[in-house]
Length: 241
Image (cartoon, rainbow, N blue to C red; front, side):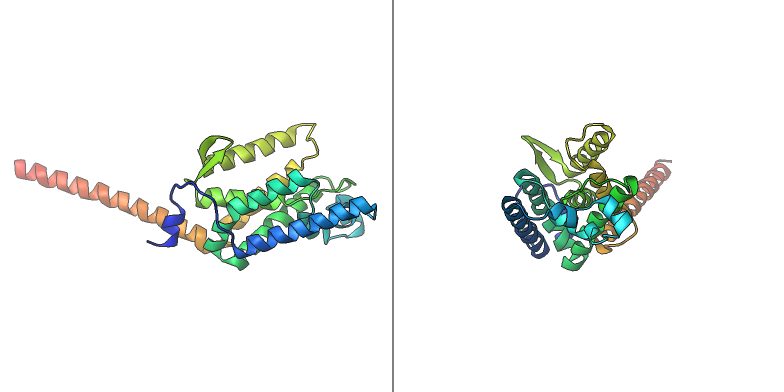
């Protein structure tokens, strides 16, 4: 049985580390330690230089912020949840696509989330930091490619497809609220949006192509079954007559 059949089955377990996921987690942790040291030492702000400040991007062309903001985080819980999300949902995608395509997808979602943030608030001086946009894009891809995987939401088991719907719905509703509690919900939605467009455009190739071929195979199988059953019924009626 191929790895694709195995990976789409409904299972409960912990993922194994993969090459790109491990590297991304290490980079984020190292950068977070540097941020923490900078805050304790009282040096110049990392957030203003490497965080995503829409005003700085649109007026001063700090375009590198569209990439660097992904690796910055605000506190321990912020980086903890993002890295857990990357570890839970990233390895299977990397094994399915390969390391290069997975990294490309990660940055497409992260940069896309940053672009949407800048486009919707081009004059905002408030920095956005964190890998959440990229993580939401990864979550979307996981739900599309492994829809029947079981995820434990608090104590309740739920299929991946519904987990994605709940996460996206909460981000959307929160983005409409006047009080976001410092959470960049637009970036979350941006990561999912750009991830969806990239996947539908065939950016990563084999994963969705394989799903389409499986869907086409099932459809042809159903047509054949209908034809076969209908033919047997007619043959049976002819013999009775």
